Length: 231
Image 1: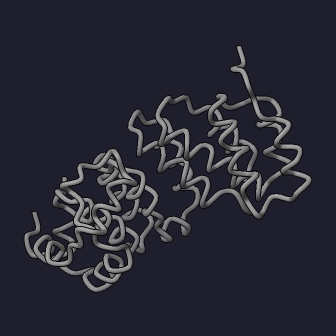
Image 2: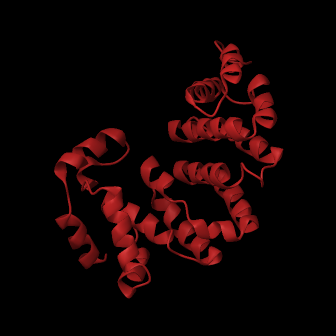
């Protein structure tokens, strides 16, 4: 435990904001939320990145507070070498217990070695841990839906089987984003019911709400909404 960093964070706590955050993260113990806003944590990560104190903090797992986990994620984002970054991610993923921390972790260093990232993201997707799977899907959504896109990535994500809300929501987010960027390649996954009903319908809902989907596309997607499960 890195007492100096923890003590600093405790001094920054905001109970009103903590109460607000706890309502958004039902999987997190409210007592572990200090209520420190993200810009403050990112600023701290920038200030201490690369220091002995930060290195010690990264090795002190598990953390006690939600904000310690977010600070940990932001420090990982400061790692410039993709291999070192992946090692830090693999050490941290088992301790992520909420969607906010998971979704905050988007290291730019991984873009330097997309082949390594793809291999690891596939491993993460096949994990049994909710937020490891969610992170793997997120990595495909963030890094592989533009010029690096391949239809096999849609196939890979569509094959994830989970009843967990936070995994299914990320799948819906992935396919919504895929529809905005790779509409023609992604539409068949909706037309052919490649997803479970909940994720299928959530994808359509989110796509219809997106300003990046055309009016004509939205009208067609609405006709694909499912009322019954596919046998």
